[in-house]
Image 1 (cartoon, one colour):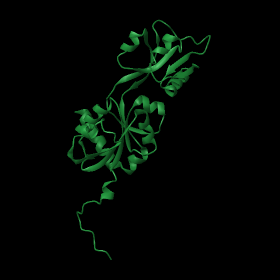
Image 2 (cartoon, rainbow, N blue to C red; image 1 turned 45 degrees about the horizontal axis):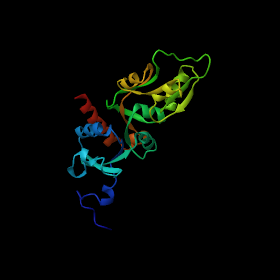
Image 3 (cartoon, one colour; image 1 turned 180 degrees about the vertical axis):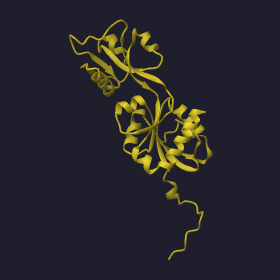
Image 4 (spheres, rainbow, N blue to C red; image 1 turned 90 degrees about the vertical axis):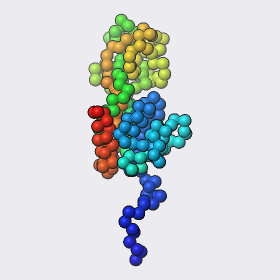
Length: 236
């Protein structure tokens, strides 16, 4: 029989390589505010570095190591649209994504916390003074959010043609490509500069912390600890 393992022995390198939780983070302008929020909640870079330095976007590493209450955390840096997919399949236990992305992907995920970052609106917009005419033809809608747009008009009982565009959505009504657009609006200044205005709101948008439902049960303790810390920071 092998001797009993001494109490207090350090974890093996293999055990330490397994993170307590894995979090999918969106690359881009949201990453900075998210890293500051997580750092205030007690997360640091591995080895005592700041979380901001651990998430330095000049590095090409796609998996970063962090610490929360002494436990290893893996941070996956992804395109925002990919975050819900990694959470839905359980590759990431938690993720940070906009409500617009979550709704568009229509994934089954628990969202325990609104992080209050990047507040804006998903809206229907069109030329100033023009109204949607559904009596003579099927209106055409240009958007980066085809599922959310289709569901919105279906709820209103309006049949539309959806045109999927990925950039300069405001150009669509100006060139005749579409009658209306569905897009994110923060201040409305871009719409106004292009002779467009908001016709109706589809969805209020902000950045959410989302969780894989199975992970929330299986790794509930470290996940709930992070949620509690973030909630305390947001309420301070």
